[in-house]
Image (cartoon, rainbow, N blue to C red):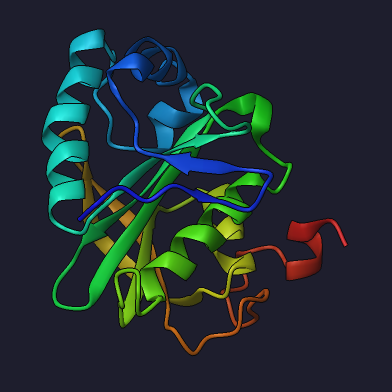
Length: 198
């Protein structure tokens, strides 16, 4: 597929390139990025190079794009968001954001842009976008919940993080789901009003 830049005038999503390698390495030193993702730890320049070569490049070639999150056109990387193929008509969304930009609604904006593109008939025309996160990652859960994702369950030992099995929460959004905070998440999860600060 050809590259798509997505923006709402506040966030810009573009394909990460070799010019972003040093910044990606810097971002991936953050303890929370390491805690909640499957990136290698410690994270080196070679890991960023491999990410571009083995994830980003083939992803864009096979309708599974990965975008760098930027807060200005041509700005530096502040996070990543991508869609990863999980069967016909289905992709899984994954993302992370740097500490300085958390809690400002930027990730929600990025998720909304990616889902709009994923479901659009002139985008990927997906039937379903799934989300999985290691249990306890409430910030990730809050971001997808605000964007119309419905909680679907707990996958016991459903993921692998650096060689260890981990439990995962699972949710999904369909093209017909309204883009609004979703009720019906488990009792362990804060209410929508508590999450959104309303």
